[in-house]
Length: 220
Image (cartoon, rainbow, N blue to C red):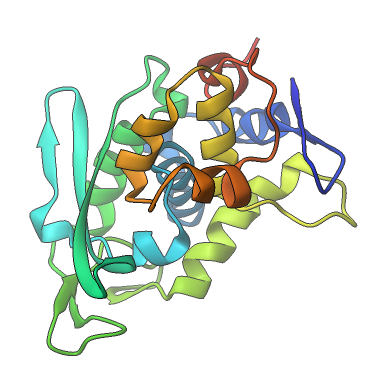
Protein backbone atom coordinates (compact mmCIF):
# COMPACT_ATOMS: atom_id res chain seq x y z
CA UNK A 1 0.00 0.00 0.00
CA UNK A 2 1.21 3.54 -0.65
CA UNK A 3 0.77 6.98 0.83
CA UNK A 4 0.11 10.05 -1.27
CA UNK A 5 2.30 12.98 -0.29
CA UNK A 6 1.34 16.63 -0.74
CA UNK A 7 4.76 17.32 -2.24
CA UNK A 8 5.86 14.11 -3.96
CA UNK A 9 4.17 11.20 -5.64
CA UNK A 10 3.14 7.92 -4.08
CA UNK A 11 5.46 6.40 -1.49
CA UNK A 12 5.67 2.61 -1.47
CA UNK A 13 5.80 1.69 2.21
CA UNK A 14 5.92 -2.04 1.50
CA UNK A 15 9.23 -1.79 -0.34
CA UNK A 16 11.14 -0.99 2.84
CA UNK A 17 9.38 -3.79 4.70
CA UNK A 18 10.23 -6.23 1.94
CA UNK A 19 13.86 -5.21 2.27
CA UNK A 20 13.83 -5.68 6.05
CA UNK A 21 12.15 -9.05 5.66
CA UNK A 22 14.73 -10.14 3.08
CA UNK A 23 17.52 -9.57 5.60
CA UNK A 24 16.22 -12.41 7.74
CA UNK A 25 16.16 -12.88 11.50
CA UNK A 26 17.32 -9.92 13.55
CA UNK A 27 19.71 -12.02 15.65
CA UNK A 28 21.58 -13.20 12.54
CA UNK A 29 22.05 -9.82 10.87
CA UNK A 30 25.43 -8.34 10.15
CA UNK A 31 26.08 -5.51 12.58
CA UNK A 32 25.86 -2.92 9.80
CA UNK A 33 22.38 -4.14 8.81
CA UNK A 34 21.32 -4.49 12.45
CA UNK A 35 22.31 -0.88 13.10
CA UNK A 36 20.34 0.45 10.13
CA UNK A 37 17.29 -1.66 10.91
CA UNK A 38 17.20 -0.68 14.58
CA UNK A 39 17.66 3.02 13.80
CA UNK A 40 14.86 2.88 11.23
CA UNK A 41 12.36 1.02 13.42
CA UNK A 42 12.99 3.26 16.42
CA UNK A 43 12.66 6.38 14.30
CA UNK A 44 9.42 5.24 12.63
CA UNK A 45 7.75 3.81 15.72
CA UNK A 46 9.01 6.41 18.18
CA UNK A 47 8.47 9.41 15.87
CA UNK A 48 12.11 10.37 16.40
CA UNK A 49 14.54 12.47 14.44
CA UNK A 50 18.10 11.26 13.92
CA UNK A 51 19.15 13.92 16.42
CA UNK A 52 16.68 12.48 18.96
CA UNK A 53 18.19 9.02 18.59
CA UNK A 54 21.65 10.52 19.02
CA UNK A 55 20.52 12.05 22.32
CA UNK A 56 19.07 8.86 23.83
CA UNK A 57 20.71 8.48 27.25
CA UNK A 58 20.77 4.71 27.11
CA UNK A 59 22.06 4.16 30.61
CA UNK A 60 18.60 5.30 31.74
CA UNK A 61 16.61 3.23 29.24
CA UNK A 62 13.89 1.17 30.92
CA UNK A 63 13.09 -2.23 29.45
CA UNK A 64 9.57 -3.17 30.53
CA UNK A 65 7.81 -6.47 29.84
CA UNK A 66 5.94 -5.06 26.84
CA UNK A 67 7.87 -1.95 25.85
CA UNK A 68 11.11 -0.03 25.96
CA UNK A 69 11.27 3.52 27.35
CA UNK A 70 13.99 5.83 26.07
CA UNK A 71 14.96 9.17 27.58
CA UNK A 72 16.02 11.82 25.08
CA UNK A 73 18.27 14.36 26.74
CA UNK A 74 17.76 17.99 25.68
CA UNK A 75 16.13 17.41 22.26
CA UNK A 76 15.35 20.29 19.91
CA UNK A 77 12.01 20.91 21.61
CA UNK A 78 12.10 23.32 24.54
CA UNK A 79 9.61 24.58 27.09
CA UNK A 80 9.66 28.26 27.94
CA UNK A 81 13.07 28.46 26.31
CA UNK A 82 14.57 25.79 28.54
CA UNK A 83 15.89 22.33 27.59
CA UNK A 84 13.69 19.37 28.42
CA UNK A 85 14.05 15.64 28.93
CA UNK A 86 11.70 13.68 26.70
CA UNK A 87 10.60 10.11 27.44
CA UNK A 88 9.62 7.92 24.50
CA UNK A 89 7.94 4.55 25.02
CA UNK A 90 7.90 2.11 22.10
CA UNK A 91 5.71 -0.99 22.03
CA UNK A 92 6.67 -4.35 20.51
CA UNK A 93 5.32 -5.95 17.35
CA UNK A 94 4.13 -9.56 17.21
CA UNK A 95 6.34 -10.25 14.19
CA UNK A 96 9.92 -10.23 15.50
CA UNK A 97 11.23 -9.27 12.05
CA UNK A 98 9.51 -5.88 12.40
CA UNK A 99 9.69 -5.51 16.18
CA UNK A 100 11.57 -2.37 17.30
CA UNK A 101 11.83 -3.62 20.88
CA UNK A 102 13.39 -6.90 19.80
CA UNK A 103 15.78 -5.06 17.48
CA UNK A 104 16.83 -2.87 20.41
CA UNK A 105 17.43 -5.92 22.61
CA UNK A 106 19.61 -7.59 19.99
CA UNK A 107 21.57 -4.42 19.23
CA UNK A 108 22.03 -3.61 22.91
CA UNK A 109 23.39 -7.08 23.69
CA UNK A 110 25.79 -7.01 20.75
CA UNK A 111 27.03 -3.43 20.67
CA UNK A 112 25.99 -1.35 23.66
CA UNK A 113 26.45 -3.27 26.91
CA UNK A 114 29.32 -0.98 27.89
CA UNK A 115 28.29 2.68 28.48
CA UNK A 116 29.49 5.22 25.92
CA UNK A 117 29.39 8.61 27.71
CA UNK A 118 30.05 11.81 25.81
CA UNK A 119 29.23 15.49 26.41
CA UNK A 120 25.88 16.51 24.91
CA UNK A 121 26.30 17.93 21.42
CA UNK A 122 24.72 21.25 22.46
CA UNK A 123 25.53 21.41 26.19
CA UNK A 124 28.89 20.22 27.45
CA UNK A 125 27.56 20.22 31.01
CA UNK A 126 25.27 17.30 30.13
CA UNK A 127 26.45 13.73 29.54
CA UNK A 128 24.75 11.34 27.12
CA UNK A 129 25.43 7.62 27.23
CA UNK A 130 24.95 6.90 23.54
CA UNK A 131 23.14 3.84 22.24
CA UNK A 132 24.41 3.57 18.67
CA UNK A 133 28.10 2.97 17.97
CA UNK A 134 30.38 2.57 14.98
CA UNK A 135 30.52 -1.00 13.73
CA UNK A 136 34.32 -1.20 13.96
CA UNK A 137 34.61 0.86 17.14
CA UNK A 138 31.87 0.24 19.73
CA UNK A 139 33.46 2.81 22.03
CA UNK A 140 32.72 5.62 19.56
CA UNK A 141 29.13 6.92 19.21
CA UNK A 142 27.51 7.38 15.82
CA UNK A 143 27.09 10.98 14.75
CA UNK A 144 23.70 12.45 13.87
CA UNK A 145 24.63 12.31 10.19
CA UNK A 146 25.59 8.64 10.47
CA UNK A 147 22.28 7.80 12.15
CA UNK A 148 20.44 9.72 9.44
CA UNK A 149 22.27 7.79 6.71
CA UNK A 150 21.36 4.50 8.38
CA UNK A 151 17.69 5.48 8.45
CA UNK A 152 17.73 6.63 4.84
CA UNK A 153 19.37 3.38 3.75
CA UNK A 154 16.01 1.70 4.42
CA UNK A 155 13.61 4.57 3.70
CA UNK A 156 15.12 4.97 0.22
CA UNK A 157 13.24 1.90 -0.99
CA UNK A 158 9.97 3.85 -0.65
CA UNK A 159 10.74 6.30 -3.42
CA UNK A 160 12.07 6.40 -6.95
CA UNK A 161 15.75 7.13 -7.38
CA UNK A 162 15.23 10.78 -8.35
CA UNK A 163 12.79 11.54 -5.52
CA UNK A 164 13.61 12.98 -2.14
CA UNK A 165 13.63 10.46 0.71
CA UNK A 166 10.96 11.38 3.29
CA UNK A 167 11.94 11.76 6.91
CA UNK A 168 11.18 8.68 8.97
CA UNK A 169 9.53 10.79 11.64
CA UNK A 170 7.15 12.20 9.05
CA UNK A 171 6.35 8.71 7.79
CA UNK A 172 5.60 7.50 11.30
CA UNK A 173 3.46 10.52 12.14
CA UNK A 174 1.50 10.24 8.90
CA UNK A 175 0.78 6.55 9.37
CA UNK A 176 -0.14 7.01 13.02
CA UNK A 177 -2.66 9.67 12.04
CA UNK A 178 -3.98 7.66 9.11
CA UNK A 179 -4.47 4.60 11.32
CA UNK A 180 -6.72 6.56 13.64
CA UNK A 181 -4.33 7.39 16.47
CA UNK A 182 -5.52 10.72 17.98
CA UNK A 183 -3.37 13.76 17.32
CA UNK A 184 -3.16 14.37 21.07
CA UNK A 185 -1.37 11.05 21.51
CA UNK A 186 1.18 11.94 18.84
CA UNK A 187 1.73 15.38 20.31
CA UNK A 188 2.31 13.82 23.73
CA UNK A 189 4.74 11.28 22.25
CA UNK A 190 6.80 13.94 20.52
CA UNK A 191 6.37 16.97 22.80
CA UNK A 192 5.24 19.03 19.80
CA UNK A 193 3.84 22.43 20.70
CA UNK A 194 0.46 21.66 19.15
CA UNK A 195 -1.55 20.11 16.35
CA UNK A 196 -0.35 22.71 13.84
CA UNK A 197 3.20 21.34 14.09
CA UNK A 198 1.93 17.85 13.29
CA UNK A 199 -0.36 19.00 10.49
CA UNK A 200 2.01 21.43 8.79
CA UNK A 201 5.33 19.65 9.06
CA UNK A 202 4.94 15.92 9.64
CA UNK A 203 1.84 14.65 7.84
CA UNK A 204 2.45 13.48 4.29
CA UNK A 205 -1.20 12.75 3.59
CA UNK A 206 -4.66 12.85 5.14
CA UNK A 207 -5.93 9.42 4.09
CA UNK A 208 -7.67 8.17 7.24
CA UNK A 209 -8.27 4.64 5.94
CA UNK A 210 -4.73 3.32 6.35
CA UNK A 211 -3.82 0.97 9.20
CA UNK A 212 -0.34 1.46 10.60
CA UNK A 213 0.09 -2.23 11.51
CA UNK A 214 -0.83 -3.35 8.00
CA UNK A 215 1.02 -0.67 6.06
CA UNK A 216 4.23 -0.27 8.04
CA UNK A 217 4.84 -3.29 10.22
CA UNK A 218 3.00 -6.10 8.45
CA UNK A 219 3.57 -7.73 5.09
CA UNK A 220 0.60 -9.17 3.22
